[in-house]
Image (tube, rainbow, N blue to C red; front, side):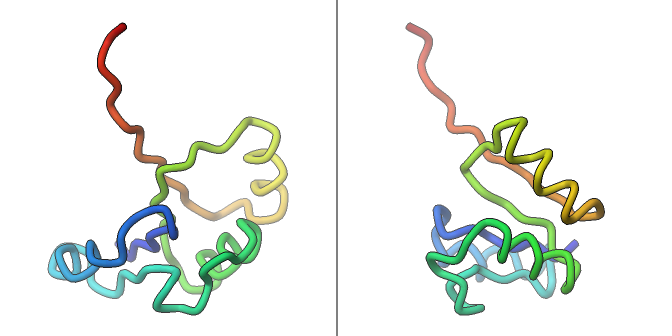
Length: 84
């Protein structure tokens, strides 16, 4: 599976995952820093990437992306927070 790491993740991760996920890339290496989410989703769909990000989409924005890009994949990484 080819992963596309969003700009909120370090580009240094790529070198550590290429053996498990050949063809993976960071948005920085593709010239997509500060690009819109729609542009990143579009590229991911065209080139067969699964997007990995720390951001979580709201239902509304996810629905609008899915209308545009119904076959795209998205993975959100949640940061563990200590219990209050």
